[in-house]
Amino acid sequence: MSRRYDCVIFDLDGTVMDTSEGVVRSVQYALRGMGLPDDDMERIRRFIGPPLHQAFTEFYGMKDAEATEAVRLYRVRYAQAGVLEYTPYFGMLELIREIRAAGMRVGVATGKPEVFTRVILKDAGIEDCVDRLITPNLSDKRQDKPAMVRAILDACGEKAVMVGDRCFDIEGARANGIDSIGVLQGFGSRQELQDSGATYIVQGAQGIRHILGLTRERGRFLTFEGTDGTGKSTQIERLRAALTAQGRDVVVTREPGGTPICERIRGLLLDKSSVMDDVTEAYLYAAARAEHVRAVILPALERGQDVLCDRYIDSSVAYQGYGRQLGAQRVMDINREAAADCMPDRTYLLTLPQQEARARIAGRGERDRMESAGEAFDRRVAEGFLHIAQQEPERVRVLDARRSVEDLALCIAQDVAKLKTSGGAVR
Ligand code: TYD
Image 1: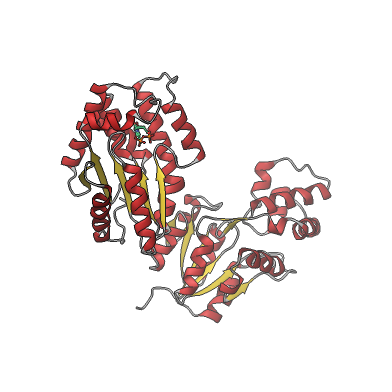
Image 2: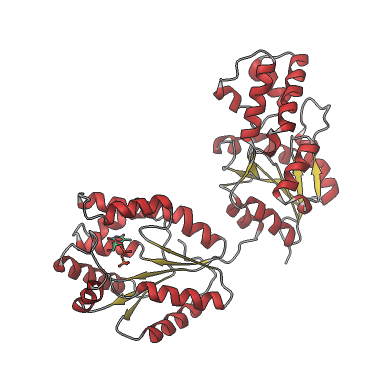
């Protein structure tokens, strides 16, 4: 397959990693050394991105010799500690390895001196993935991105794309007639990237992957729903074991829950001493979902893992929409933004006659706040779930929870096997 690009040139700071902590602390050190105050954070943060000498000159009105001394001081602190004060952006190191594994070349054009850049690349475990590293000469006062990009093109060929977070990167690409990808996760704004003429603007690693044609298969998002006591956990565990045995990477999680903050919200919601309005309750479930989707579900799906989730948005529609009678549409509206448009590929709805469900949970000790809402509430919830299933027969499979555990597990595993892993279901 012929690729649109066979070389990807990365800027480092603000693109692959956030090195701001080391930069900020070292600028402060240099300012103190020059007898200047070190607490004007707004001004100091502007040092992230542009060449250092230029920044000292422009932001602090230094003369050439002063700026040179400030850069020297900066480098003393930076070499000692600042160099390793960095945080890689989500998925970027992985992406660089993938690019290399896909047979493309990787270039790095950074304003950081070579010694520091090598320390960082080694520490981040991507040193071996970089075919061509171009750094400024230590005596250079201005960094010349266009010339750096040119040097990489000379070594790696012209079918290249530049990835960066600031106008300097985009301009470096344009000066050489190549495409550029502006990333928003760094320090430049959308406006800056647009104005400098970025060919594409994306959030981060996943967007770059799309442009490079490296999209991985997404994992499958499978949810389990039903009233309390229908045996969801048992079936989730069975499916987890079956998928793992097939070599799939599986994440099991639950709602409300799945992260420390979501577990705290869960505590509030299920605590019998909590008194709250039904609307508050709906928003709390949605708040927990917003965090859970962003912190757990979407990252896992993007890594290609299958996600098995005990309850999801259908529980909100059934419990708050039907049970609390807020209305299905209203609850969906509350959840649209919370769920980041992430809907399950398949939902297994386990059903039981109400008496049987009640009998099953009777032996579980004290009931929580939701389990104490009464029989009429439970009936409305069960009807709500069936209504959802009728409206979305493609997504929701209704299963009679009175069937044996084995029988249900087999039925679910067979259905999952037919589900493509190609994604596209995260809408
Ligand atoms: P949980 O102990 O997980 O119930 P179960 O073991 O039956 O799955 O408790 C979650 C409770 O929260 C459960 O009663 C259903 C309720 N719930 C909602 O009301 N709305 C929601 O959006 C979710 C996810 C759960």
